[in-house]
Length: 417
Ligand SMILES: *Cc1c(COP(=O)(O)O)cnc(C)c1O
Picture 1 (cartoon, rainbow, N blue to C red):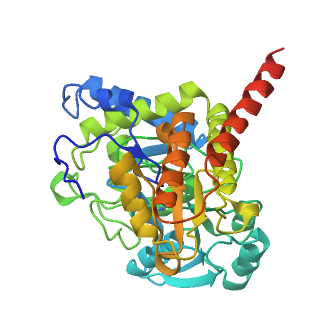
Picture 2: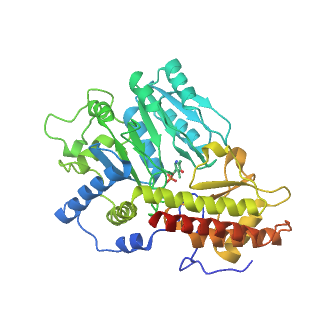
């Protein structure tokens, strides 16, 4: 193996389910000078970011702001806020991130009820609705885009069922926000957590989220103002207060809201980056962005299949931004990934748990999701598989993917005519 200097970081083509390549506009935005946290120039940026996030989440919720920390900090903040010890939480699980929701809810003392399906499938929404009727949970927590298996959970009717049975619907949209439609208000989602380092192509470090009045009411009863900044006589909650200080959504929303009640010190450079990333997504147009993700997925899949590879999982619920490939018999998946990285500078991912060593996961997310990256990945993978002794129909993958792009060009020309 050739040794490479570790600084500066080598340029990479990142085709994983995150972190993916950051948009250069985002990186430039992050290098601007610092502002004080109560500087009106900064609080105006905070307010503007909230307005941008409402558009990204397609919501009119008052509360839409980022929690500092990676995406799981957002998931933990929401669950810490709505779960009191003993509360029943229903978690449908068919991959690693469903297990994460279980894990977090359990740590906050929830009485967790789990329904499980095999990795590589998703739930029929009717099955989830049946479980809601059976268990009568206070909270239903589920994953929209399960990156560990590359599946998209349909949400139809689950929001309405949660209203009917007075449950809150909490959705992990970390992998889908900005790449696949996430219609918070239309789908009656009560709290949604997004991610930065996936389809938004901002570095990891913030968890944009939104929640509605149903969640706000629960939080309000648990409000506890930090001792050092309490007004005399005030500050204690009627219900058991939220167990985390750092991830206390009550305090966070008071910091992001007009009260500007100080909590932590907002992450200045991350906020610049997130704001720029969301602006880029909205400038492109969400529908156009979703269409772009579908196009490059199509080209990638066509290329992989032309190479003789097979896709993992139920095709009916494939997540457009993550493509899972069965590692062929007799091929060392980790060795292929290492050679692809070392010779081509291209990173693809393996998976977790029962899928470890069985599949590769190729992301087509945000700024990483474009024609050159798809073609380079197919070409590189073909060469590396040949080096590993697999008999690949040489050249077919790139031709098949290029056909997809030509079809798209023709369709576009026809639309414009
Ligand atoms: C990446 C991911 C997470 C965890 O995100 P971190 O930023 O690493 O905390 C959670 N859920 C899903 C679906 C993800 O894809």
